[in-house]
Image (tube, rainbow, N blue to C red; front, side, top):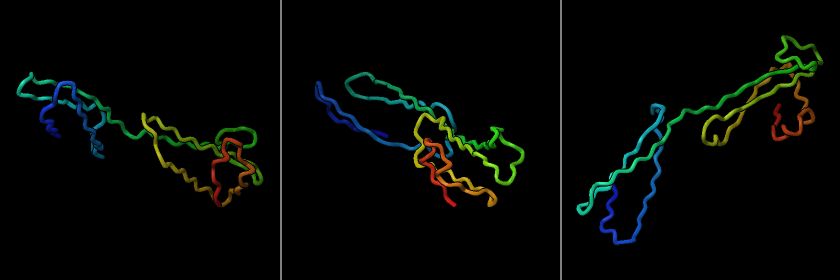
Length: 128
């Protein structure tokens, strides 16, 4: 990118903003942007800015607990209550917008509705 300022009078200030996106095939790591100010009257000025390119670091975990509190039990008897716990973690330095988690449960598992949800889970929508 090149920006022609023309004449800048004493005490004047100009700025420009532009948005760029990271290519999907970009290598991860630091990228240094070098800016150069050239003038016929002054010595060349150089400034740098650094950007870290990171990969999406979302993780999803699912666990199940039976009525006795056993984590990931090997079996459940008919009529037993089991609790599924889903956890999403965003280890990115930026927000991850518009996330939706879909959990397809086996047909043999009965959905007991929102009455089974703890208060902090009330934002979950149970479908099916």
